[in-house]
Image 1: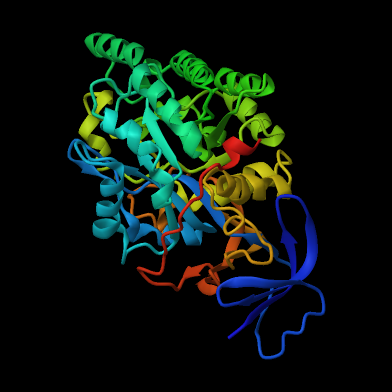
Image 2: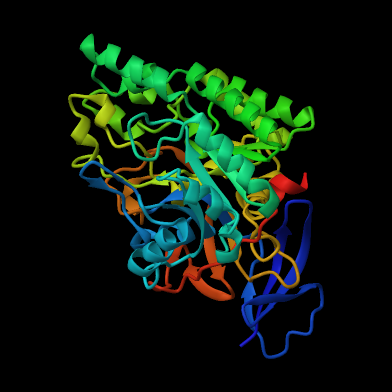
Length: 463
């Protein structure tokens, strides 16, 4: 049966207009007024905004730290409740395996039959060998046009030195693969961590002290220089501080294809969250660390002006009571990460659009369109246009509430944004034309999500 969404205000990354949307066979087939919709099921969106389904390009459903393991795709209905219809998840390479085999094993064992939203993947380097650099050129063949390297985490299998980053950049450019980096100086962090622990400074707040802005600034600039020497595009994930953002902005203005993102928690939280008593600060241990208000303000300016291209959640669902408490006496073993998959729209709308920091069109660009372009999913995803997947969010801008773990689907025992104001609510969500959220309640099922292959030569090669 065809579906028509009528009487809503359609918002895209470039415009806003009144129109009806006709859906057939999972696709948008017509947009306009006075459409011939005989026989179609009618959805009345009067007083509502009609938005493209969100694309969250930074999630971790597959991560372990010591004995702690994150919540997986069995909680991916949280994405849909939050207006995100597609996630681009980090699929970690297994040491000694190819990236291809690692992703296929992950899909078979932990994704297929569980995913409730659509999904794509980034590769993540755990074994920077000569074979890996050759494989990078073949990643587009399996629909994975992006791969991430960690410059941080000295001593862990996923730490990559400059040699590995440079070789990956060299290998990427001819095949249109986008290299992503987590930019922090691993050696300096290691020194600071050991010094702080030796001084008896073990609490969550010292996580930020051990990872000051300069470790990110230095590594970001170094990654930019490596990319320039390799002649390859670069994408810096989860940018947190003013100077790192400026390094990316200035490199782009010099003609280098250098880009970056930030994440919702860096826009609204700060180091004082890490100082909360009774080990509550551990809930906010993520890397890079939270920053000060000055950095938050700079990041809002950056996303408004396009200096950073999108806002992701960096969703990473470790429990507080059992898993974060592994670091009760040593902040260096607190599992890093903050759950936020379902809160991304609420944070961006409430503290961005409603506060006048970004327009509704910029919101759509940051939330859906730009991440789709970065990962080779546009125009199938992240866009309301004829031929695009019918991933559509009907959004009620008049809702007033608070964000809380009490109504969360993330499967984690706390909410990163607990008690914060929420303006607006996702009312209905269509995933490829199938109603999967109705009146704010998930009505879909496990396994309805599909693997969406990304195309090479994404936004980082086009601008």
